[in-house]
Length: 268
Image (cartoon, rainbow, N blue to C red; front, top):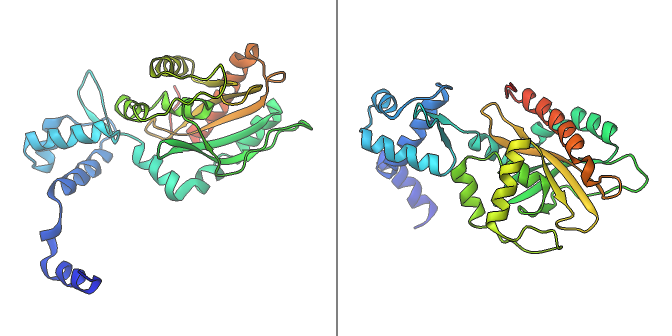
């Protein structure tokens, strides 16, 4: 079927080629955007005049794919930041970087090491920006460089705060390739590390991909609390030893929180 034939069908038959459940899913998302505190299944069903069973199936599917969050006590659904995260990754990286550059430079000036920012996309991490360190010997990473999910501090920082369903889906597809004797090579160990990251609010790479190279990172959140990016520092082990991680992690977390606030995230 050529393009002209397709256009004629579209113009003559219109809604015949619409996908009802997809339309309902989009309407559901558009509705929930208007209710930041969330709505229950019955409320969504009534407002959209959808059958309750259909509403539940659509909402559950969106929840499983990470596009919705659900409060366990109230059972209310809210829109997650995944759509915004995809938007940043696809077309708005520059806007994110522009809102962060001065804070990244301030962090670099404080820690003296190279500071980087990255996002998750298609089951891998991507470097968006970097501010070179002030030491004569410094790490340099090309913009667009991919990083491994199970070794890199930024991917751990973002993964730890993803909705559970999204996190589990990504983890199920990871290749736990060994690089050094410190590399995490099992899903159970990786999940344990992510739990610690979520508790502390920052992540580390203890030479897990390259011996002698340490990294410390923290997540950046959008206004809905979705981890759309991470910032981190990279340095040699002698300048960034393990006993400095706690202090350094909290410094990076503070700068990441400032970026998050610019994106509309409220930090309690």
